[in-house]
Every structure is written in structure tokens, then in C-alpha cells.
Length: 111
Figure 1 (tube, rainbow, N blue to C red):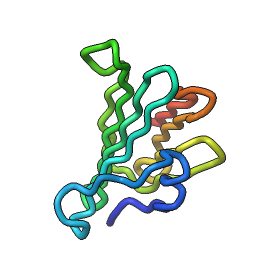
Figure 2: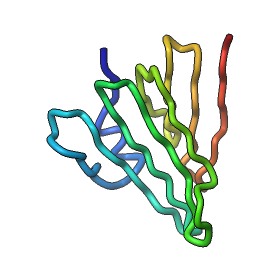
Figure 3: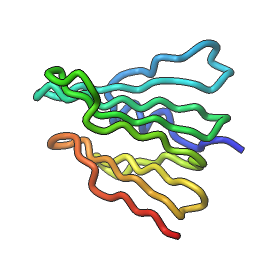
Figure 4: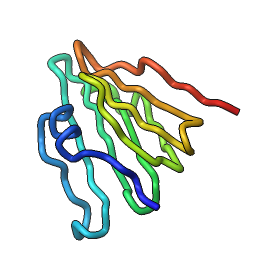
């Protein structure tokens, strides 16, 4: 199993090409975007391990504001200026808004 996502959708959201870690076939990459206020959102994807790391940093802080490791990721989708990370057959979901500034709109965890 692997993470399903559209490279085009992530390119639209992050407005830059990903940095590939190692060989392209290994399925590991990093997307990042910095907004006008100095906040930087970083998404690291490990396609075949079904894991994503997501962090929100600011240039004036030495530690991340948000630092999440998501396991059992099955899909990353886009809805306008929102990135939605689906985990574990839709039981967990994280929604990240990109505009007007980065924010986490919805974190849903079902037991």
C-alpha cells in the first residue's frame, strides 16, 4: 500500500517543486512554503511507509510551532486552498489551510 496524491495538487498548494530525498523511486520527498509573515509549512512524505511529517515554523522561533508525525496515511487531497491528509481509512483527518495564512482548520480523530 502507498499514499495516493496528486503531484499537481501539491505543486499548486506549495507553489514549488518538491525536494526528492534519495532516489525518486524511493518515494520520499519534501514540500515547503513560506508565507509573507515568515511562517514556513513543511510536508515530508514517505509514500511507501505511509507516513507524513508536517511542521509549522516561524523564523523567530528555534522550535516548531506544530510538529506532527502522521502514520497510516492513505491519501493527500486538495480542496481549493486546503490540503487534507486522510489516515487509516478515513478515521483520522487533518486539514491545513494555505490562505490567507497557514492554519489547521480541522483535526478529526475517530475512535
